[in-house]
Structures are given as C-alpha cells and as structure tokens.
Length: 98
Image (spheres, rainbow, N blue to C red):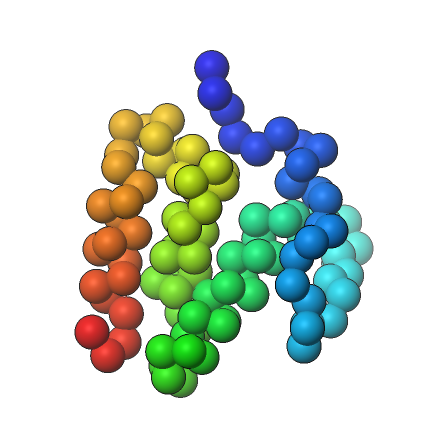
C-alpha cells in the first residue's frame, strides 16, 4: 500500500529555500520540523506576498501543500479517494481577493 512520506526523506532539509528564514529549532519534546511543513509554510508565505494578501492563511498553506503531487497531503487525499486537484482548486477560489 502506498503510504505517507518515507521518514528518511521527510527530514532531509537540503535544497529548501531559506533566504530570509531562520533555522528551525524544535521545542523540547516536540518533533522536528519536516520538509513538507517547512516548504509549505515558506511557499504559502511567498504566495500570499506575491498575491498582495496581507497574511498567509490556511488556504494559502493548503494550496501550497497540494501543489506537490508526491507530497504527503496529496497522497493522503488519494488514500481517502479524494481528488487533490479539486481540493486545491476550491482552496484557491477561497483566497482573499478572488
């Protein structure tokens, strides 16, 4: 069965854009930040900025997480028999200014 992200790939942070972002630090007893989380947050922030939105909200984050066809959010929706492109299009339609 095609599961969620292989654990070794999720923790590799090389190649992620980091200009203007500090190095993440995990809180005591909290899990480390993963690749999908960090790239999603950074992409959502950049996408909101490019659109001229005053902040990056959950819709920005969902749109960004579903942009990766091999990402864990997309694979999870497929496991649930939900079309990720439909969910992403709905989230894009809910963004500020649309």
